[in-house]
Image 1 (tube, rainbow, N blue to C red):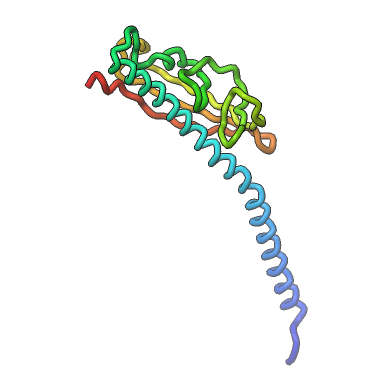
Image 2: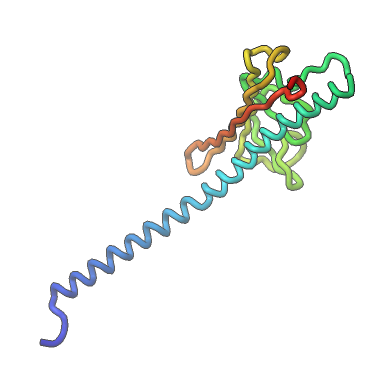
Amino acid sequence: MKGFTLVEVLVAISILAISAGLIFTLFHAMVTLVPESSSRLEAYYLAQEGVEIARNVRDTNFAKIVAAEPGINWLDGLDACEAGCEADYKSEGLVPTTDRFLLFSGGFYEYGGSGEETRFKRTISVDPEGGDPLTATKADVEVQVSWEERGRTHTVQVSTQIHNWLEF
């Protein structure tokens, strides 16, 4: 017997239809997830930058202490941020957050200036061990970056500890 039966043709068409549907579903998922992945990566970089800003403020305080400037504590500029602060790469200390969006200007993210508003908000929290910045030898730093995309709020969080290594 030559040719295909009706059942064979229907099975072949069903397999092709299911395959095409799966390919379409995978393509749709890729198109949907790629922008979110890009934003998530950008948010992780901004969160890591927040940690580095806190370390930089601490290290600047250490330089002042070593230079024998009077009245400097290793957590100066970081000690009022248990509830959350904001700072950018130009900051000398953290200031209480005003829930502002970061601006993008000249290749940098910042709060001041005339840059283009981004969708990212960053909050930096510093919690000294024991709650007292004058006696603490370490502090927990937590940076949270949030943004809205496709009607949902996304959040990235990075945590670390900074230490008063001058005391060791």
